[in-house]
Image (cartoon, rainbow, N blue to C red; front, top):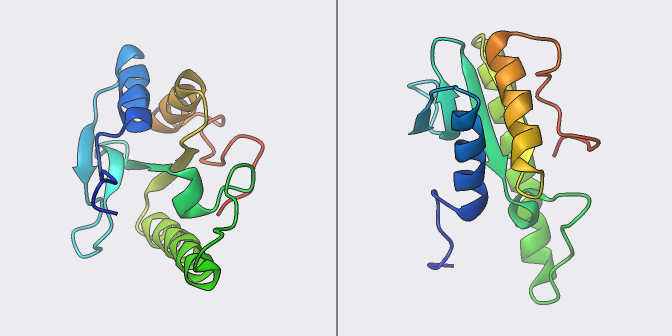
Length: 136
């Protein structure tokens, strides 16, 4: 568990690079709401957009997450708790007037960056929905 990086992972760096290539500037690893102990991967304070890059295993990707073979009950509860926390985070941020964009780690960075750009610009395409997948 100690070997799992909390930030600056390969998928996160790829997304940041793709977003930066589109001309967008952002803050990294910031809490969008001061009283909420949840950190977004990318934050656009002026546009009030928070981007979360979710790992397939940790957040229960319906396409890639496979049940653990050891200690299955623990991991099932852990992943369900992460998904519930994600939903709570999204609801709280939306209540405060923020737009939330969720990206799976397996999504192509260029595609995800276009969704982020649409959200920052306030376009209809930046719906925050993950491409062809349900919310966690």
